Amino acid sequence: MVDTNSDPSNIDFPIPANDDATKSISLITGIIIQAIIEGLDERKREKEDEAEKEAAVAKAKADAPETAVPDRAPAEGGKRARKVAVEADAAVEDATPSAEKTEE
Image (cartoon, rainbow, N blue to C red; front, side):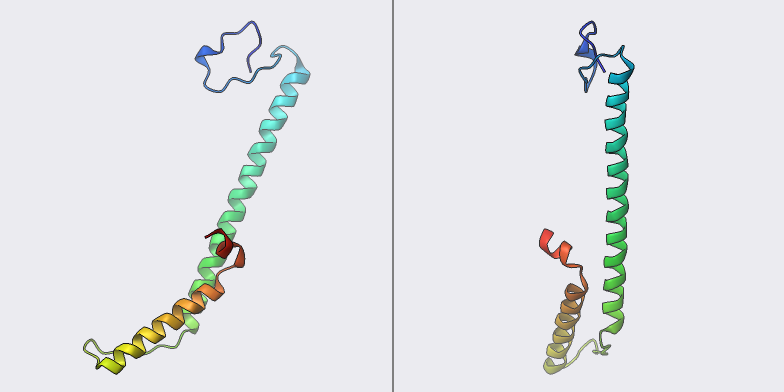
């Protein structure tokens, strides 16, 4: 916080306010505290959303049918492997929460 009697040139983010009045100081610090609380809540929600997404992906992978495709599978086996991979990707995408789909 800088008052009119302060030199703000040395300060990265000056907040013009009366630095002598307790009400001014309380107001500014209250706003800063609220911003910190909101940021922590947002970070917590993002971590929870990420954990839900990872759980959905793990569940989709666990629910996907397992097929053993030999290293040198005939052409038909390769098509089947690609089809299974596409189905697994679709299952993962279906399990992704809708809010994340709209962000992409």
